[in-house]
Amino acid sequence: MLTKVFRAIYRVWVSLMTLAVVVQIGFAGYGAFDAADKADSGVVDEKSFEDSFGPHIGLGYLILFSSFILLLLSFGARGKQRILRSVAAFVLIFIQIILGQSGTSAPYALGVLHPINAFIILGLLGSTTFMEWKGRMDTVAEPAVAAPAA
Image (cartoon, rainbow, N blue to C red):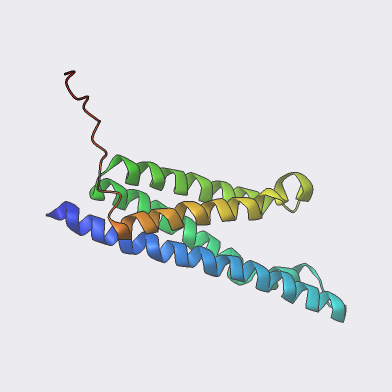
């Protein structure tokens, strides 16, 4: 009974995380265009540039925290798939934070990986959400049994 409750919470939580990642990608676009607009005006300094990406940075840390909660929920919801996907999400999001912080010092080596990793995270969370709502996380494939020879 308690497992069903955790699974329902897990399903909603991973759905909200998927939505948050979509919003996060939108915030990245907002930050880029806002910074470009400020550059056209000639008023870009480090503070105004960081202000452009403030929502993106803030939501990024909330997504990291929520991925830790997703990991904890996966243990209550049980299931090898849930746990593995939650571990993968937490690790990828943790790496995402590192890429975001180090991307400015190595934009061509690490900075380019930041948006690519974002889409990998979106794919992982999106497919997990889909599988949760379709009930595919709870089904375990039974091994095929060979028919007796005639």
